[in-house]
Image 1: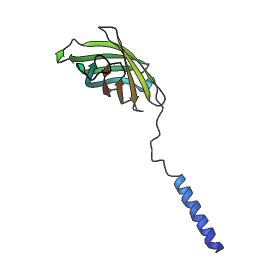
Image 2: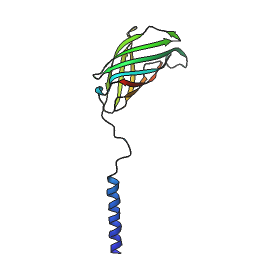
Image 3: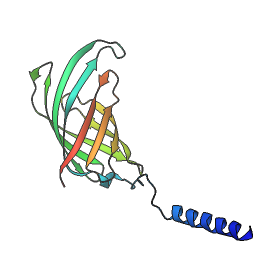
Image 4: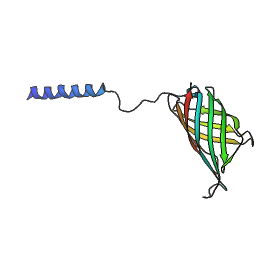
Length: 152
């Protein structure tokens, strides 16, 4: 009986040590910073403006194709081509700023070159900086884009 108990104890310890040496089944996130976003990125999408905010009436439909250059220092330059309610608009060239937390969440602010208005977005960045997802948080605006790196 004593021998069987020792054998069971030894087998149990072997199993525990074996489990401890296995890699975790979930990814360990890398730490991000503003330098995570550096290079040329492309995006496209549709934005809906609702007036007044909170009503179910969509008044303005904006289709956008954009190229953004993230400089790795919290600043960006953006070229956007767009249509508003199906009417082609002049190209829009703007600048922006962005923040990135260690957990790869961030914010982005762009300045409309025509009106001077600031546009705010929340972002989630891939740890390698190859992709970010943005959601607009301006009142009355429904906006979401996937932005992908095309050049380092």
